[in-house]
Amino acid sequence: AQKITQTQPGMFVQEKEAVTLDCTYDTSDPSYGLFWYKQPSSGEMIFLIYQGSYDQQNATEGRYSLNFQKARKSANLVISASQLGDSAMYFCAMREGQTGANNLFFGTGTRLTVIP
Amino acid sequence: EAGVAQSPRYKIIEKRQSVAFWCNPISGHATLYWYQQILGQGPKLLIQFQNNGVVDDSQLPKDRFSAERLKGVDSTLKIQPAKLEDSAVYLCASSLALGNTEAFFGQGTRLTVV
Image (tube, rainbow over all chains, first blue to last red; front, side, top):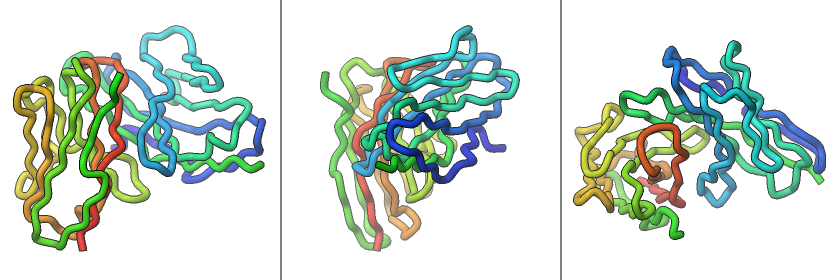
């Protein structure tokens, strides 16, 4: 089974508007971490935001916030006030557990295009 | 603070040739990952080191891929012999430790096998 599912291959958003990128995950481990990365056309993976499974509040980092719904196993990324520079691939990832290999599993990504 | 360094940035080889990639993680980072990212897909973990020991190499095609991390710092990933389907970006990442800390990525090596 897929550990991370991103169902939106591509999304468009008007500049200055907010956009939500979807991510659902699958794990039976009670301890896990959820990450969002941005990958511009230059190829590097840029860490955006992190949510721990035991965190009580949704994570926020500047214009990025993570809408964490544990019962639904979703961890959607919300980007507010979109900018042209936000156009990139966005990947959701999960690391399971405090034991074991702690692999970081990635979804297939969502390509965001910000329209002027 | 210097980031994760990878070289080369680009490599073109013929099938059946061998190739090696190098990664220097962020100083002090114990955990090092090698990922393969095929065009249009998310990164797939190939191998994970904790210091100089292998934590997980279950997804590494061991008949042709090998990796080492001597002295627990730099790492090399080798493909021998390469196949057309190995064309991808190979990303190296490091993190401070196991657990819920973010991984920092290098710029990757884009490999084209012709």
